[in-house]
Length: 88
Figure (cartoon, helix red, strand yellow):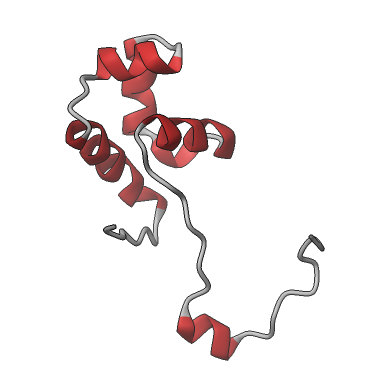
């Protein structure tokens, strides 16, 4: 399994296009699977940084991509652990 690190919102559009192409899907095909118009998907790919978390997760799921959140080593050492995380 390959991992890709995204550190800025500006990196998302290229990543999403790459995952779509790797899946062998056109914008029209992926849009149909998502239940949106091709123009909507095109806008989403161009402006991925403004997409809601829910829509992004749905898109990633259709593409067979997981979203994994991992605390960076440097941040873990520099910052105290958050106190407002939900208790599961």
